[in-house]
Image (cartoon, rainbow, N blue to C red):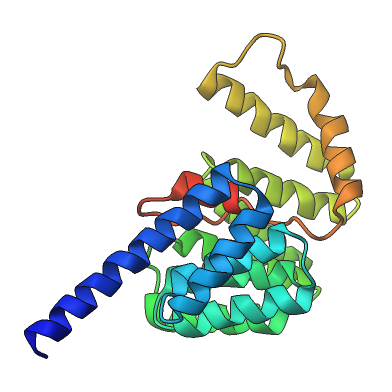
Length: 237
């Protein structure tokens, strides 16, 4: 590779990183329409970037596009990032939300093959396995996995809501509400919010959310990139 090729490659890498940062900024500060328009353009300009492809898939889901469209974009991201176990876990969650369990299963297999147990989202991989187990009717195994995820990373609120939603879906409403109350109590302890933000309102809020989005919101907070963008991941899902 000559000097010109090096310069060209470095220039493209810089543009790709700038596009990714712009996607993140729009996701947090812009409108859904702005984000979709920009991420679609970026995905077309940088087809080699699994992160950008995945960002566009998240945007499509946030905009409530069809399951087919979301799954197709998440599959594209998973294929581009086939050797990156973190991409596989993130894409797998999007695919589950788009009702593509088989696509998510392929992501799990690729993550297991390329990552073993030593990568940033290894714990979240168990959450994805739990969702697949539940979809397969293996409810005891699903609960074991969800509780294992929570025990290893209790600091993430999505791990609590993941277990609570599973319990709620199984008709174990009192247990689900107890889990949510424990989660909010922990949040109050660690963040020390205003005195009037008590947990007494949590059960009703959880019931309302469960009615509004049955089966569509599982684990969407629980997986996060473990390197630079944990908080961003919580917003994007």
